[in-house]
Image (cartoon, rainbow, N blue to C red):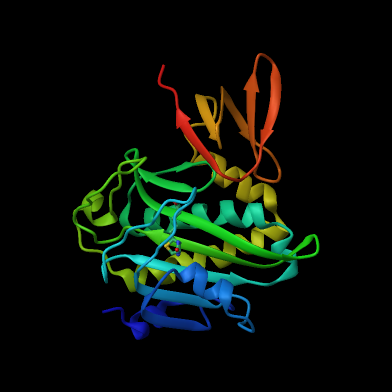
Length: 258
Ligand code: BTN
C-alpha cells in the first residue's frame, strides 16, 4: 500500500503533485486526466493498477498491482505547453536522475523517452495532449516505472527490468516518487529558463548518439547515423552527408550493431 504521508514528507515541489489523486484502479491514468477538466496545473493521478495501461505506438503498458509506479501529471501552463517536446525529454531525464541518485544505477536514455538499465527497459513515458485551434491547451505526461516487480511475462520490444531486479534491493516507492517530482519540477524550470541545460544533460545520458540506427515510422524504415538532437528535441538523422529531422511521433528506434 502506498503511503501518502511518507511520500508527502519528502515532496519539495511548488506545484507538481500538490494536488495528488490516489486511486486503487483506473483504466489508464492518462485517460483519467485527459477526460477530466478543471484540474490545476501539476495535478498528479496515481493508480495502483491500470486495467488498460497504454504504451507508445498503441502498445499496452503492463504493470503488476501495488509494486510499481504508474501515474500521470497534468500540465496546462502555456509556457510549458509551448515547449512540450522539451518537457518530454525532461521527464525521461528526471526519471533517470532520480534512479541514479537513489540507487547508484547507470541509466541510459533512448530517444525519445525510454529509460534503460543494462539495455533493458525500466521506465517509459507517454505524453498525450489536446488542442484548441493550433495551440496545445493541455498535456498529460504519463510515467510508468518498473520498481519492485520481480519478473515479467509476455512479449516485449525491449526486454523489461525493474529497479529491484537491477539493484537487488526492495525499493521505497514513496521516496522514489518524491525524488522524481522534486527533480522534474527543477528540470521544468530549466526547460523555460535554460533549455540548453536540459538538452546537454539529456545528451550525456544517451549512448546512441553517433551510432548507426534504424527508424521505423508507420511502414517506412530509415537508417543512418543518430547525429544529435536539435534545440526542440527532434532527432537529427545523418545519411550520406544529408541531415533529416525526425520529430516525435509514432517512432521506433533500433540500434544497428557494428
Ligand atoms: C512506453 O511505451 O514506453 C510508454 C509507457 C507509458 C506508461 C504509463 S503508466 C502511467 C500512464 N498511463 C498510461 O496509460 N500510460 C502511462
